[in-house]
Image (cartoon, rainbow, N blue to C red; front, side, top):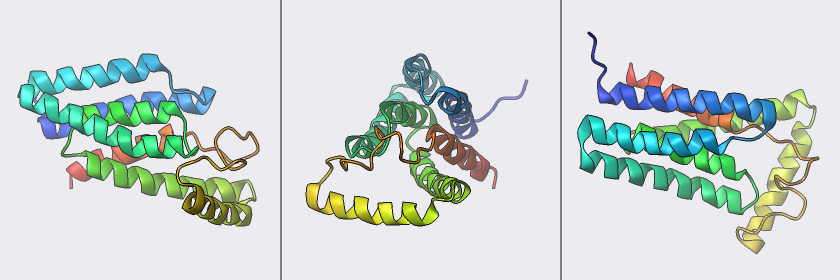
Length: 178
């Protein structure tokens, strides 16, 4: 019987979670709690079972760190609560040693996907102008959502961000083999 090392088990399991959530996000624009909450708990149990209490606590810290980072974007009106809960679950499953890669690769993936979406929809120039407007708004108003350019406005381009989270997590797994 082949035994996978925890260094691969964690990002592989986190990738599976993110991929399942991305299917829901693409189809319904929602990431259900029945995925995120059990995944978070599963991450804690997985770390406890494979490496003990200390590893479980670092997995909890990883989930909380990821959640805090994404919560700032949620408060600013840039993403939904499901994205925050998903990155918390993914961070918890992946563990502390993987979250820097996941967060950076997710941000890069999300940026690339956003550019592609804007180009495909013929709104690239408008999107660039909006990014400047949002930056200016947040410089003046802090984390207050922009009155028009936020996730609640149906006219804004919206990316199912679970795709970016899944991409960042899968890329993290891929780089473990390099």
